[in-house]
Image 1 (cartoon, rainbow, N blue to C red):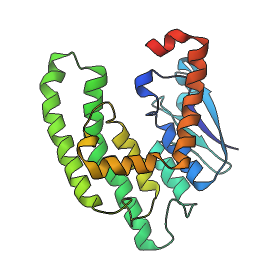
Image 2 (image 1 turned 90 degrees about the vertical axis):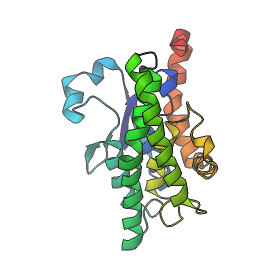
Image 3 (image 1 turned 60 degrees about the vertical axis):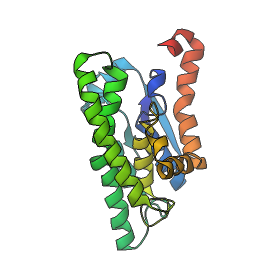
Image 4 (image 1 turned 180 degrees about the horizontal axis):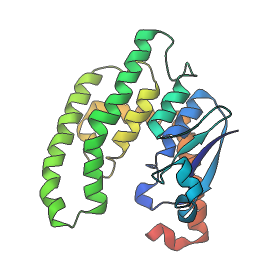
Length: 223
């Protein structure tokens, strides 16, 4: 069976954001069954796991042909086998690739900086000085992104694709702020993608072990 490595538990602020959700979502959209392998800190730091994922992150993906890490690469690999995620024509595939990399390279670095400041360093002097500058760049990217989306439902060719999995996940990393809500077309886009049954199943699958861990140890939910 196809297998996705994921964490047994993460703090509440990270739930729904861990990158295995990208792979789960792609598999759900493609109709590919999978199982997950849940790891904790000890296995994450082990030599065996580092041999599969040198940075100690998740996900790692394995099927009967490949073993991979890096969520964007895995989503792209899955998409290449699925008409639900990648069109058959060359021009359409090129546009999916373009928007997938735009999400990863033009948007995610700025979103990641802002999320890192807010979630991990908010009280530090350097972060308070840096945050306004980063927010300016995030707003610029969001404005450009909304203009590019226009009146389309999705980014590549107007049809849902692998690019929307990555784009939605990046935009969801701003959900601790009101920034996306200030761009109505983007807010509607995210809501549209999150409403997809495949996303709802992927999110439920990621959250299930976290809820189970918190049921066993209620203090985890307060961290």
